Image (cartoon, rainbow, N blue to C red; front, side, top):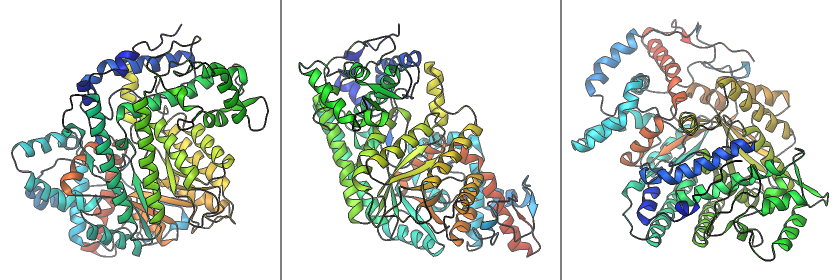
Amino acid sequence: MPIPFRNTSAFCNLSSRATSALARSSRAGAPFPRLATSGNRQLAHHRLANYSAQVRNSSTTTKVGNDARSRLWPAVLYGSAFTAGVATVSFMSSSSNTSYAEAGVQDGVAPNSLTSDPRIGVKNKSTYDLVVSLLVYKMCMMTTLVEWSPKLIELCEKLHITGPAYWFIKHTFFNHFCGGENQDEIASTMDSFKSAGIGSILDVSIEVDLDKLPEAETPEAVRALWNDRADQVASLLKGSVKAASVEPNSFSAIKLTPLLSPLTLQKVSYNLYNLRASFVHEDGDKDGRLNKEEFASVIKQLPGAKQSDLGSVIDALFERADVHQQGSIDWIDFSRSLSLEDPLSRPLFMGESNKEPSSEGAAAFVPLSRTEMEDFDLFMGRVVSICEYAQENKVRLMIDAEQSYFQDAIDYAAMEVSQRYNQVGQESGPLVFNTYQMYLKDSTRKLMNDYERSQRQNFTFGAKLVRGAYMVTERKRCEKLGIPDIINNTIEDTHQCYDSGVAFLLDQIKPTDTLSSTPAAFMVASHNKDSVAKTCAGLEKRGLSPKTDMVMFGQLMGMKDGLSYALGANGYKIFKYVPYGPIHEVVPYLIRRAQENSSVLGAAQEEYDVIFAEIKFRLFGQGTKIPVEVKTA
C-alpha cells in the first residue's frame, strides 16, 4: 500500500521563522508532475513530505519576469582590454562550421516564402554595435564564465566596484538584450521594432529579492509582509502594461508567482494536481469518465469532506457537472465542478488536518486554512485587477509558465481569467494568453483539454507555445527524489510535441475567422527555425494568410534577429520579448536565469557567425559570402 503523506502538522504549522525561510524560496521543494499510476502518486506524497522536512534550508528567491527570457550572461567584469584587443583578434581569426552560400539566400532560416535580404537582421546596425554584439556572443560561449558570473557579481559587491561592473554591462549585454531602463528608452526600442514590422512584449525584469524581506516573529507578520510585497509587484506589472500601451497591439508578460506566498501557491498546486491524480485513479474502466459513485469517492478524500451534509453536496456538484445528464463526467466537467472560488466546493479544500487516503493509490490532499484561502482570494483579485487594467489600456497579457510545482495554480488562474476576458465576439480578440511548455510529457493532453474547455465555455483560447526553460532543474529534482522524469525523454520527442501542438491549433482556425470569431489565437514562441518554417508552411497549407492576427511568432530581443526581421518583412505577426528595468535590478535576474537555459547558449554560435560575416562583408565588400543554412519549404 502506498505510504500516505502523514506529516501534515509539520507541513502546515511551520514556525514563523521557518515560514520566513520559505518566504525566501519560490523554488524550495519538489515539482509535482502529473502522474498516471497509483505507484507514482505515492512518490508525489513523499516529495511533499521531503519538502516539509527540508524547508528550513531553503535560500532561493522569487523574481518578476519570464524564465524563458534568459540572457546568456557570462562574467560580469571582463575588462575593456578584452573589448579592444581579445575581441578583435577573436572575430578576425574565428572559423565557422556553418555551410556557406552566396549572399542573397535568406539568413539561416526559413522556407522559400521568407527568402529576402540575407543581411536583414544586421544591416541597419552600426559597426560599433556589431563589434559589441560580437563580444557579447563570444563571452556567451564561454560556459565557465557563465557559471561563475554570480560569484563575480558578489565579489564586485564586496569590493564596492559595482559601478564599473554595471557600466560595462550597461554598454554590452544590457544594451544588446534589454529594452532600456526608463520609459524613453523603452519607447525608442519599441519604435525601432515597429519600423521593421515587429511588435513588442514588455517584460519588467525586476527581481523581487525575498532574502531582503524583514524577519517576522509571527505568522501574521509574515503574511502581512507577503501581501504587502505582492501588492507592490502587482503595481509593477501594471506599470509594464502602461509602458506597453504606447504601441497598439502590444503585449505585457506577467509572472504570477510573486503575487502569492510560495507556500500557499505550492499547496494550492499540489491539491489541484491531486485532483487530476485522483480522477485517473478512480476511473476504473479507464474511459476518461467518472460515474457518480467514482466522483463521490474523490470528494470523500478531500480535507473538508467531513460536513454533515456531504451527501447533498456530492449530489449538487455532480448534477451541476453532468450538464448533458449522461450519468458520467469527463475531466473538464469534473475540474470545473470543483472550483476553489465556488461557495459549494470551496469548503471541501479547507481544514486543519490531513486525511488518510480512502483506498490504495488514492491521493492525500493538503488542507488549506481559512487565512490561506483568503490569501488565495487576494491573489486572484490581483490577477483580475491586472487584467482589468490591461483591458482598459488595450494591452494583451502573456502569463509566464513556471516550475511544475507552481504550474497547476498558475494554470487555474489563467483559465479563470481567460473565461472572463477572452469572450468570443470581442473585436480585439483574446486578452489573456497562457503558456504551454511542450517539453513536458503531459503538455499535449493539457493543451487539448484547455482548448476543449474554452469551446464549452464559449471563450477564445489564447496560448503561447514554448519548449520550456526548467529542464535542468526539473530533472535534477526528479532524480534526487527518485520520481519519474516529467520531461520528454529526447529532444526529438519535444520537437514532435511542439510541432504537433502548433498543428493542432492551426487546424482550429479557418481562413474566414477574425479575432472576434476565432476559436483560438496563439504565439509560436521559438527560435527553432524548423518550427517556424513548419508553421509558415502550415499557414499556407490551410489557406491562412501570413498577415493573420490569430497566429504570431515570438523571439527574444537580441536573438535570431535575422529570423525576426524576415518574418516582419514578409507580413507575419512577429514580436520581440523586451526585458527592461533599472540596470542594478535587471542584472541579478538575468544572471540567474542564464544558468537555467543552456539551449539559448547553444544558439550563440549561430548569432556570432552572422555578425562575424556582416563585419567581413563591410570590410571586404560584396564578394563576401554570408553563412547560412539553406532550407527548403
